[in-house]
Length: 322
Length: 272
Image 1 (cartoon, one colour):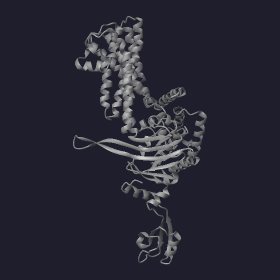
Image 2 (cartoon, rainbow over the protein chains, first blue to last red):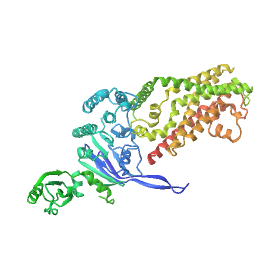
Image 3 (tube, rainbow over the protein chains, first blue to last red):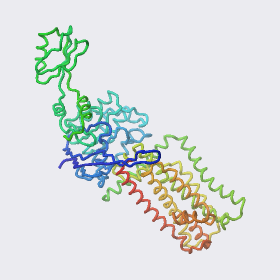
Image 4 (spheres, helix red, strand yellow):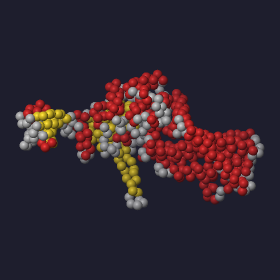
């Protein structure tokens, strides 16, 4: 049995839009439009899509906050809404812009409270807290009221809060949003560590594709409520034709862009002294060798495929069912 | 849930209450100021009645001492209900700030969590003052204390608390459908409090019919006071109606519970 199962999961909202001075029209908006997905134990799934694609709505349906309009969802074999409180004991949830912590109390107190809320045996609670304290460097602000924490510190607190009851599945909605580089690294490092242990399933929505590249082998791209890609990052690249690039800096511009087999010129910059080749079938060595016969090379650099660009292209493409 | 689940949940709720107390203690000065300020509100309820009796000797056929029993029942019950569940009127804010979602992903019922996490302990002074007014009124109204009346004096106040609490919850659920419904809710809750501060005989027509019997506010203070004072209802309802308040409170609680469940279901399907 998969830890998470979604079959034809669908969510429609009715919104009222102004139509004329007093009249309001009801309009149905489909936020999630028939998602079928299986997530296995220990998987780390990146769930991405543009604003309003239905990412958060999906997570809310899986955590029992929202009721699906149609379709079926199971998490740990439970029905999220009907078995909400039983499911809550087995999942952890981090909503990046909402807090599970007590604003006016020291961080330490929130953790103590959550032990009662989730009915965790003291020994287990202490062991998990000790692990989070060392991995997330919580000690320096454990006695600070939450309202005085920086966003990065608070997010480390939220992660700990979501894990103290040893959840089987951890849902993270934008866990790195608004964080500085150092805090992002800390959060990613921690999640990577959690994933390596292999017993926690992780579902992550994000706008920051570096999160995905660092953490998730499997990537689900959702747009207009539909899954448009489900697979590895490499599969995404090959499917949407993203390639490694070779950037060659030349001493002097060539009269015309060179034609190298298997490596078409993508861009010509700096008055022709910088050429960008896309590696289709040629290797880096072949490009360098081909160029060396034509011009004096000042510098060569290789640019890895930019997932952001791929995804941007994906979003712009008309919705096709993948 | 199983038995250990129930005791575990109780312990969890107690921990939430303790956290709320400590949170409020973080702002000590403002807490004390609010304690005093909140008492003022109930003092004014009583003063209003005293001022009225400075002008007239009787109010709707009731003397000052008799009216004070009505006032005492009403304001002690309202203040206690306001302390315990009054903050549910902040439901739109809970939804907007995401607290409502946060509460839904925890292994506890949503309503008790919201109430305990935002319990306005500063309103304690008001409830205590209301209770003092009630005790004073009962002691000075010259009641002929039969065992039945003693029982009623013990049961009617908590029943009135339950009734007001139910009104708070029911009116708050309207904001699941209509986010700006706060004023409408206030007109029923605070309107109800003002209505129950006087004998219903001072009101008339459809207004009395709606508030007193349509919504049941007559059973909060008026009818129990009649029964305690041993007076016949000038409006002609039988004497046993005075003992109906616990039943009415239970019905109100059931309506509130239903409204809450339906409201959450609506929230789950609309997410707004």
